[in-house]
Length: 403
Image 1 (cartoon, helix red, strand yellow):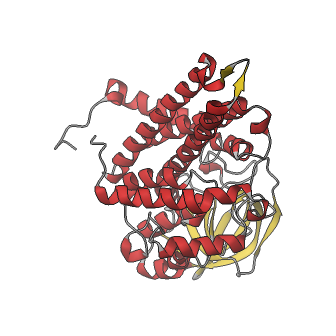
Image 2: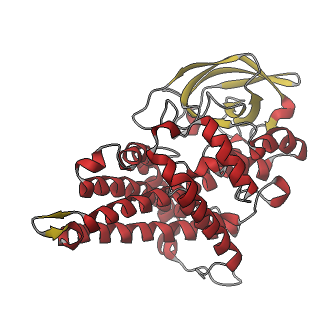
Image 3: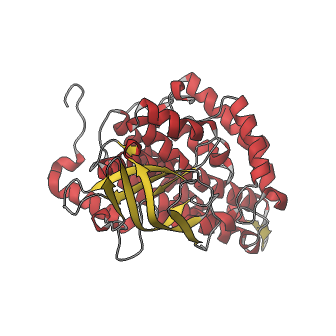
């Protein structure tokens, strides 16, 4: 791989870095910047989004004809790291989950009419969205074949009955993508359907309390009680819900990693700055070998994560599925984010445990990284399956001109 980036992409990266440094990071220390769920206040967010859009820092993941910048996944890897140096960054630039993944899958698979109806309002920032797939036991979690929510075809519409939970952003979402079973068979049994929050026949049972700060709209349990969805709102085709899911989750998992790398790097910044000025027993923390070992190890592991993300993004941009590459990146980055927050808190001592820094916020947020979009253990199973199929070719080098 050639790791150089174009001057244009570097200018965009620098512009994002400047916006984050000048406009976002200073707001993190102000309690008035937060809503009741420890995310950025909606009024403040609206102001900052307008500024970001005016500066051309909006929807990098979409092509220009859909209102974005069309930088590709490698370009997103470069820029998303810079965005998430601030805990407020991704949502300001309209690059936060779940909207980020929903916009990419709608752009990839939606018809022109569906893009106008369902994608364009999210891309403009007029509405938020959610992806409803996970269910409480005995329904589908990491194993989508266990999905029990059923969409029964009746003429030109589907009638939905069932339950979903931990649906990110549901309380604030207007547009939903729902994965439901449409047949009892083992193959082509699931369908992706889109519905609007204003439609009757569904309700939010509860906003599930979590240990960390929440995305706007929280993580909700949803009940479907006869929701009617027109057949025109099927994404891709009936029975192709798992293809929709994989099309969405592959890049979405990777963009999670891109953002988490930014947070991990921020943890090191906070730790390094404090270690450079804090003294004890006549020596700066930065001069202690134990601190140097901590920071050096984290720097190496973050760089490993960046390389795995870059390789997976490169493979996806080439049209490959990159399952093993994405799983490796997801495991590596999720774990280094948690450890970066943990060690940065340790270096800062009581200060790190307090709300005087963003470290405790990041620490609570980071624990979910090893669970969302597939637990570590599931991704290790994916890697092993690829290893079993390919054997020694698991580590092969791609050859130019050879498919």
